[in-house]
Image 1 (cartoon, rainbow, N blue to C red):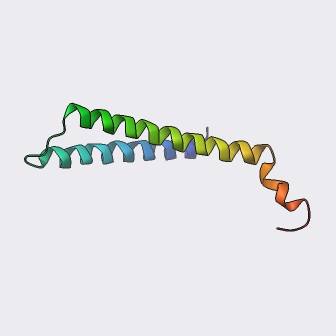
Image 2: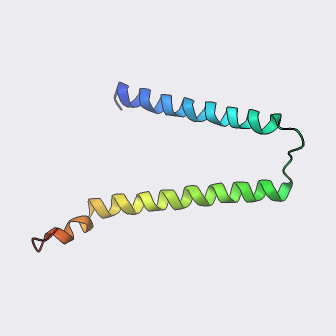
Image 3: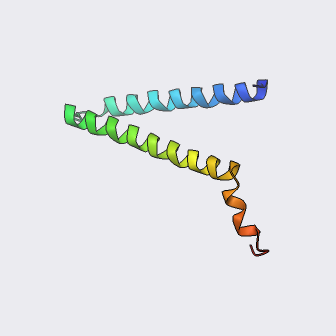
Length: 79
């Protein structure tokens, strides 16, 4: 990795951490708002499922691009 790529990864990781900490602060500062065990389980399962679906779709995009499936429409001269 080059220095620019490392700096970008560090920046976005720091941004994600700050956003998560701010979200936690706002959530915990609201009076009378609590989430039960079933709510935490639903939140975790929903988050994991969302990340898996997003990762799977990104995999399909890169797989399709690398194996030439995106170029098949151009073979007959029509776009």
